[in-house]
Image (cartoon, rainbow, N blue to C red):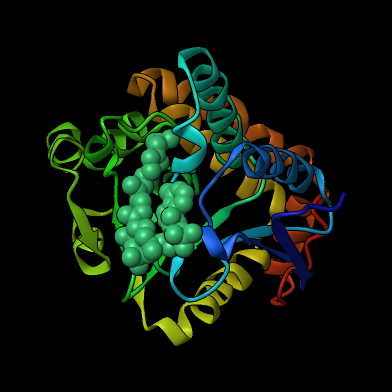
Length: 260
Ligand code: CAA
């Protein structure tokens, strides 16, 4: 599939998705949201891809939020549709069968922060600025920000950030546990590719099941989360990868996983 606002590069089992609307600081309009939704559904099924990286075009912004000019023309029912599209795009990332890493290279605001929070984890450039400043506009975060940020860092800290529209430096976001690593701008992508390459060497089905298990279990009571983990665990024993992984260990050589 080809996309107007996304650049997709596949190399060594890593897909890099670049949001390419630099003139508007990669702000997300309806067309972009549909492309993100479709692209991540496709990557989820793509057997050539083991890890996905998402970043923004240019050196100024990851994504500066939902498209404010487009929202200025919307009534409540159009906003409901736009909000629904935002959720579809974020869910496509969250539910993608492959790990998705956000490489946050600049402004990561509003819908951009919600997009990053839908990824499995975030690396950020030292220059990045992250926040949910929607209340400055008379809006509140509507693409999962109220839910995903509170689950990640706790209700009190999420409320302070959202109510005050506080924009965090990358270092502050690291301290809060939003960002896993702060990188010099020039090495951000290579640092993300290094961790992606490490993940690519692991059993792909096992990594995917681990992602599903963590995500599903997070919203459940512990006993229920443990139950769903117990049910998913034996599925590894139906894979060629597990046979290869165990054999390689016993033969003292690196495993060569095929993802089946
Ligand atoms: N939507 C549409 N266009 C945007 C945009 C956005 N979210 N953010 C920036 N742009 C556009 C600007 O309008 C400008 O376009 P023109 O050159 O045509 O005027 C261009 O990108 C460059 O932006 P600035 O001139 O403003 O650049 P700056 O360096 O002075 O400031 C910034 C950068 C601080 C990120 C500033 O652009 C800004 O505050 N942007 C809006 C951030 C924001 O409020 N995001 C939340 C949006 S609401 C949301 O996301 C709702 C939701 O939860 C779903």
